[in-house]
Image (cartoon, rainbow, N blue to C red; front, side, top):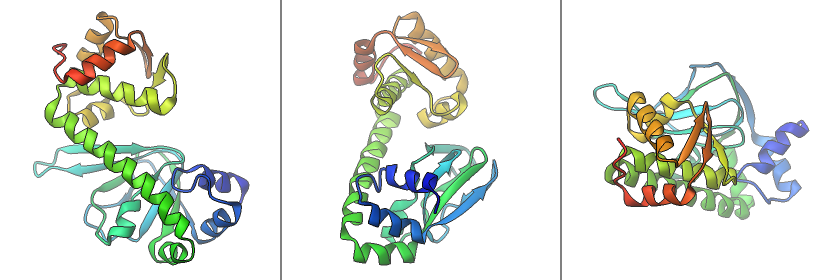
Length: 231
C-alpha cells in the first residue's frame, strides 16, 4: 500500500489518532475503486456491502422524492468517509450515492471490517464519535429545513464552513451554488438573491466560491433568529 493511501486513511476522521499497526491492518482489507463522473456508487435500498472513504474527487448523497425531485443530503470530498452507519445497522443503504466528478474511492468490505473491529475495539470507539457528529449534523439540517427561512439556513451553512475550515475571514464553498441550493431546500435563483442581499447588508462578500466574512456576529444573529427577512 503506497504512502498516499496510508496518509488518507490515517487522516480520515474515522481513524485519526490510531497507531500505525492498526492503520496497516485497515489498509490490508480495503479495495480501491475508480468511478467516473455521474456514475452511481450505490442506490437507495441496496443491501449495504461496506463503506467508503473519498481518496480524490467528490460524491453526493441524495434522496429522490415521489415526484422525482432530488434532495441532496451531503457532499463528501477528499478524506471523508460515507455509508459507514449502514455497516453497523445492518440496514440497506438509506440513500443514493453518485460521483460528482471522476473519483478514486477506498472501499472497506463490511464482513472484513467487522471482523477487524472484533480484534480492535478501539476502532469502534473512534467510529462512534464520527457517527455522533454526523447525527448532530443531520439534526441541524432538519431543524434548518423545517424551522428557518433561506437566509438563516445560508448563514448557518456559512458559519459551519467557518468552523470546518478554521477561518474567520473567508471560506470556500465546498459545493457548487446549484448543489448548495438543493442542500438548503431553495431554488438557485432564491439562493443568488439571498446572497446578494446579504452582501448588500454588509454581512458577506461573494467572489465565485469564496465568501469573505465581513460581519460574523451579524451572521450568527441571522442564523439563530431563524427568520432573516432578506428574501
